[in-house]
Image (tube, rainbow, N blue to C red):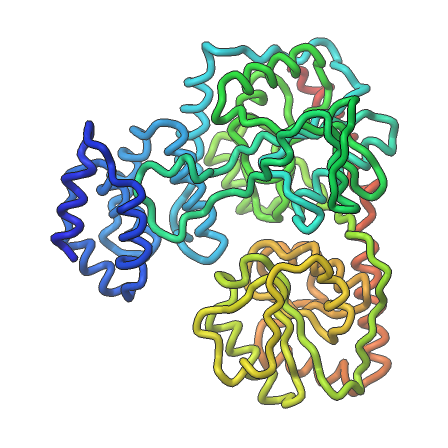
Length: 514
């Protein structure tokens, strides 16, 4: 196999026709299945001379946590990449942190290199004008990386913010910039599985109403719009990161409209940063971790800690970090909790579209402990169709649903929701609480930040003790159901949350005019 890599190294020399598809197949079918120790040993023997395979080698070292990783070499190679390739590599590393890889790598310097590259590349193509006066307060522009469907939490989040502003008389415009890694960007070899963001091609259609409530489209002569919760929002999807013409059109639109409020929702976005370099932009993440854009004003969905403040200062962030809870708006449903403590089958639900990566040995051990203590236990895993190395002892009592549209109906029939150690999962957790179903989590990640300490259990013994009390003590169970409902109500009070954030941001704009 070393000879194969050496041969690919020759083919990946500059000015050669790179075997992109062929190498990706080799990586997927031959290299990726190797045990980690064998991968590291092979990579240490391999001495590539092509920058492309040097980068690939260093990426593997980083993801494997190998001591052989040379961060100085990796950073130099990364800095020499064109923008789209920088964004591609950065996206893979950022995504890997969701599943516990590349944890020790500081991605901020790579992000800065990526954003500076994009801004430098487009500086001569178009110019964003500063905020003129107090700006146009009639319209609010929302910019997001991805727009998918009503099953996608961040999609609902951007529409939830837009709905809140519509409620107070503003005119929201939602723009999806598709600023994600795409399959067309795969040029340099990357470790598999390669992450590509979701881009729904149908949203490029003009004069179309995209009805998320009914999951259908229809002609809309007045321009494209999206409908959700019975409300309609002006909408457009573009590709300004890939197509300079789209960026020029977007910048011209911003310059002419001169909105006072430009709000980015979701992951860090090069297009948003390009605009924020010249005029005020608010950046609202969909996670509770500290996400720091370079030019946009950051929002944190929890209180700023001393460690957070040190991080802000070390990166030289110029804007203040605004604290605001992340509001949830649940998908419409008419079901009610149907599970009872005296049911013959005790159902535990786990929800997520990345569970294949998020459910690991420690969580499986928790499931085994529950099954041992409660032989009548069954598990409903909503999202995956299978999980690698899943315990044979649990296969007969586990339902893998795959991706479904009626998750809330299955959740309502369960007794408890289990949350693995991960980022994400907030929407389904709040849905469970709104039904009065307890969520068992650890003091980590988004779910913990959203629902708080009453639902934290750090050991299997603590989890089993809680389950026992809940099943055998009616007063305890009733009290916890009240806690569930109260927590869900606080998390879904969108109007109060968004109004407070808007007032805070507006005060910032008045104190620090552009």
